[in-house]
Length: 432
Image (tube, rainbow, N blue to C red; front, side):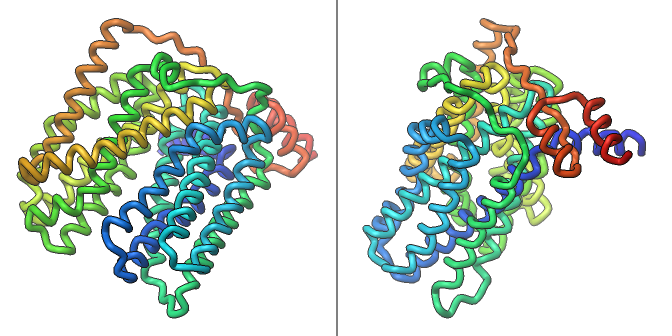
């Protein structure tokens, strides 16, 4: 019991300073997940041709890619809080603008803008969070960040069951979510990164900083994109009923959610490259097994799919943590953009290649593609571990536990990274 209490106290001390960022993340993810599903549903209801619907939906990813390569200029100029607030506000307005016209070109432009806003917000959050983390807790913090992301996205799907006879209610509710996301981030007393000039980082520099972490971001994109885009097609082709297809997709994401904390914690205690290699090594043998277990009943379907999700959804946060272990604070902003861009590259190319393989070889290529990609990553990682068995960690940003305190003490703590004893001193002064 004492061990559990100690672990919870340690977790609270690490996470509590970032509560505002996680709350903002949850509201943003809830909003954009529900918007994506509702938008796709409305396109289907209006009998939009599949090819046109695909182009409109793809504009969101184009906007996110553009944000990854350009949004750092805004953050560098005016800071994280102002940029988060500005683009969350713009996102709220763009959602409402959908109600003005059903024109396809108009909606495509709106989706482009929404993708840019989400990409910019993601860069703000991830770079800010990694600046507040250090090498001993970054994996855990990123795991909590991803848990918040998936929880928000899952709750966002519940909006689909809300009656909307006017056709405008859902847009209004999603806009409200994005507006509420402004509150915790705008009001936080958490110290923002005080960096005068962020160092630029190209694709090549991001790769050179950590070849394993950078390639793993691409690998993660390929696997996640394949699962999300082709998972329902694969499950249907394997003869699963509609409810079983739903279970396949749900428990895949749920498995990734459950595995975030233990694997993130593990990656803080050892070389993250070995954790990433171990996850992919398990996936090499697990993916083909799932192909033969998927029709084995509910228990078999749930267990196998959860194991699959626990592997593919934990790669990105651990790889991001690994890259951030090796760079300085003034490189994090541009590095965040490059890593997001790397994952989007995988999200784009993965479904295209795997769908072609499924078309010409069969549905089994969905499962075997996870093994093939994982084998490639394991071989790549072992090669780099042999060349560079030791890592020169240079990121040692302190993360100060900032408890809930009276305003004056809270602000004093948030402006300067202080040790725990200093925090206790301020509390005792307030009490007395």
